[in-house]
Length: 173
Ligand SMILES: CC(C)(COP(=O)(O)OP(=O)(O)OC[C@H]1O[C@@H](n2cnc3c(N)ncnc32)[C@H](O)[C@@H]1OP(=O)(O)O)[C@@H](O)C(=O)NCCC(=O)NCCS
Image (cartoon, rainbow, N blue to C red; front, side):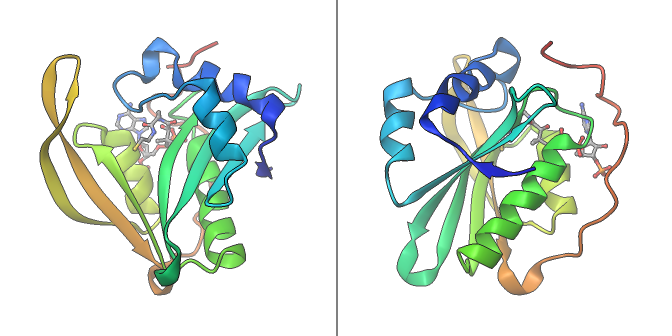
């Protein structure tokens, strides 16, 4: 179940985002920056836990242009991608941001070659709005970012969660 993160959760968040398998998909921030953001009213930190209470995934949402109820999904990741738990987390974050924060628009950017994430976003109703060509350096190579957004009136009904994905074996444990 989605819950707001506490400062004690930062270690678990950093463990996921700095895992070597995440290098191709997301960036990472120093703990101090996470601490600052967690205390910043413009940021929302969410976590989901496994049965033992360890952090299974997290998402960071930023109020990008509050005047326009425009939010950014700054980061999302689960410990074991590919089995639908990240898509569940995404659905929870969208519900929280649209229903509790009354977002009008949620945007994000994603490495062009992150097919799994692009499919997860498409399934959640996101539309691709453009390509930011050679936007960032990744492993020394220029890489493009896809810009995606979902508007409040474009939300799609949650689909049944899959029980296993083609990448279910690729885990971090
Ligand atoms: C992005 C993320 C949150 C999505 O959550 P998830 O639970 O792994 O997603 P799912 O298992 O529901 O898979 C999403 C789609 O990708 C497909 N997929 C799964 N593994 C795949 C793979 N290795 N390659 C391509 N497609 C894949 C699924 O079949 C599904 O497609 P469908 O909706 O057409 O059936 C999760 O993969 C993750 O944490 N990835 C690492 C960090 C990351 O990329 N964050 C996003 C940065 S923009």
